[in-house]
Image 1 (cartoon, rainbow, N blue to C red):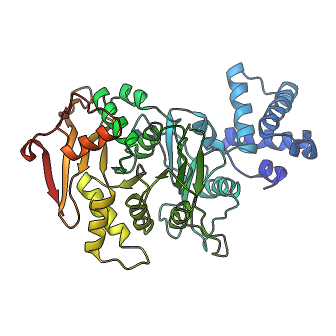
Image 2 (cartoon, one colour; image 1 turned 45 degrees about the horizontal axis):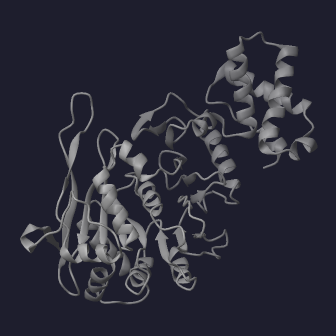
Image 3 (cartoon, rainbow, N blue to C red; image 1 turned 180 degrees about the vertical axis):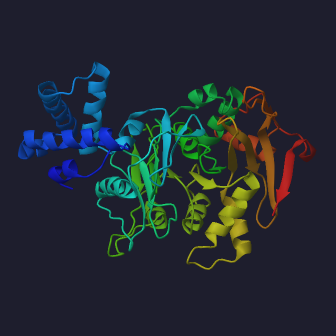
Length: 445
C-alpha cells in the first residue's frame, strides 16, 4: 500500500465521534504537509520520527491546546494510524504481551504472563479491522479475501500471524498475533520454576550424549522455548540444521543452517513442506537436526533420520502426555505418502526415540516440565516408559499459585551405560536402577 493510501485510510483509532474525527482531521493535515517522495526514501524509524515532528509543528500552529501527555498521545495515535497498526501498535511494543487475539472488531484479548485478559479496546468497524489485517498480510506479500480466507504467515519482525475471515469466521475477521519472547537459557528457566538444577544436569547429559529428544506438550506450554534452551547444550563444533514452519528458534552456535517451509503462492504452487526440508537436510551432512514441530508425514522421515545415524536430534510435538506423544508420532508417521504398516512404525519409534520431555501449563500460567521419561523398549515390544523425573503439583493456593515439587527416579542401566560411554556423569539425585523393579516404568500402546 502506498504512503498516501495508508495515511488516507479511513481508519479510526478504536474510538468514535469527536475524538475519532480529530485523529482523521490531523491525518489529512499531515498528508498536506509532507513530501511523499522524500518520505518513501526514508527507513521506517526515520519516517516515523519525521511524521511526529511535522505533526508536532501542525498542532503547535493550529491547536488545540493540549497537555504534554495529551499532545504526545494524539501524535502517537495519528502516526500509528498512518504507518502502523492503529490500536494494535502499542500492544506490539509491549514486551509483556506474548499473544494478541482479535475476535472481531469489538473483542480484543492479550496474553501476559501466561494469563489471558480482555482489553477495553475496539476497532471502529469490521472494515477498519479488515484494513489492518490487509496491511499486515501485505508486508509478507500475501492477500486475504473470500477466495483465500485463511492466512498463516511470519512477519519480518518475527511475529507469527494467523488470519481467518468470513464466511469461515462467524464473528467477523479474526486476527491472532503470536510474539515470541527472547531465547532463554535453561538456567533462566530454572528461575521461572520450569525445572530445577538436578533436571538440568540430567538434560545436559542426555543432549550432549546425543540422545534423541522429543519435547511434547499442549499449545502454549513453552515447547519452542524449551527446545531453544536445550539446543544451547549442543557442542559448538557440531553442524546443526533447524527446520521450522515459522522461524522461531534462535540458536547461538556458529555452525547453524536455518530452514523454513514455504506456503503455496496465490496460484497454489511453490509450496515447500517440512517434509521436503527434512529430506533435504539429510543430504546436508548434519550432526544434529532440530525440527520445530512435527505435525504430518515428515514424522516418518524424522524417525528414520533418528534411527539411521543422526543421533542427538530434537523435535517438538503436540501431545498431552508422554504416552500421547508416542501415539501421535505413530499416527503422524502413518500420514506419510509411503505406506508403512502400523506395526513397523511402532518398531521405528522404539528404535528412534530416546527421551520424552513433557511440558504442562498450569492454571496460574506457569509452564513446567512435568515429566522426563526414557523410552526403554525395543523392537515390537509395547512402549515402555521409564519416568526419571516428575513434577508433583499441589492444589492451587488462595493466592492463585500452583506449587509442587520435583521427584527423581533411578535411570535404566542401558541409559547409564550410554551416558558413561559419552563421558557424561549420572546425576546423584537419580542414580542407577539395579533391578527392573526399581524403575518407575509403565507400558503404553
